[in-house]
Length: 471
Ligand code: F6P
Image (cartoon, rainbow, N blue to C red; front, side):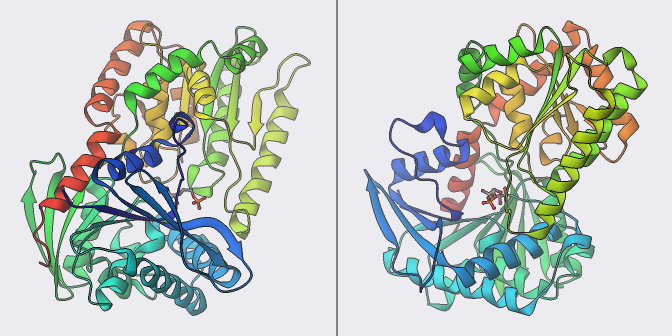
């Protein structure tokens, strides 16, 4: 079995025995690395004054973590700059928020080259290299430039935009050429795959051949010939630790935090939202829809509470500071308008909770409200479903623009720009009969049991391992 080398912007060092506190993706990657043996390489989340030194090696059984700090200029240009002020908004269809600068693009390429140079001496000839996310699109080409022939796969955790959006990026052609240096490019959904294939056909004038379903669990693969290379591209919808979360939620239902939440609600229904504080998550529209629920269905006043958990994220970037200010204003306005001496409509929390607490909160909430304006997958939607009590499940209200809507089509699917329709669906969820709630829950759980995180990870790695090296 080939060794696996995972490369991602952030590396989550998961301590032995503390898997329950770590995110599902981190655990899945760690398990793959432990079973095959391998390296997890990337940024350690810290910035330093001087030049980046050699990677720090931490050994954990057959798994080696190799992490390094970024210097301040690289952090500003690569992470805050090109990754989060250009690619992130662009890939989420927010051209209005994207900035384009030759300086940050050069920083992005420079850090990819730096990372590739630091990883190269640690590689062995038969390694499978699996690179994650938009921060590291040029990584494989940097390794190829050093003459490395290993099989290299890339997985994009965000949406891949339609070519009409992507071509607004001055370096669009170079970026897609970078993608074509991989052997396998994985997307969240068929629709992302289609956008990539359309770019190849109509912009790059390359060739796209449909390969159909494959034996490893992915669907609708295509073979792309462009920029002098042959690449397989396929959708692998990411998922969650379904059974583990269901168990965690059953325990979490009796945790001190969930009990305190339950007591504080004194029998009122709870609507919950949990998102990084990011403009792609549709939070202002969500607050508006809740306001509309109270306006259009006044019987909910004093009877329903909406808890939005939104830990701050990428706080150095101006657009993130702006959305934070906007939400603070909206929460204050809506609460000021509707609150009573014994009821506050919106509980807005800029902090994070551990997985067990969240699992208990999800199970207690009558509605999971997940309404991004654009999202690669959205694992909160999947986690909310997995955490429900099978005897008395809550209702998922889900944006059609989340990748998860393709698999979770038994949710109440909404267009988050349509505030009135979102409010109507909230009301429908609050009054939905038990039999319908159970039917929808069971349909979604069937999907989540079949495609859990282990299935996702194995499908991807098996597909990469089955490709011919050096196509
Ligand atoms: O899902 C996209 C993503 O950028 C992940 O790669 C990342 O782990 C997460 O969002 C959190 O973002 P950040 O690493 O910028 O805090």
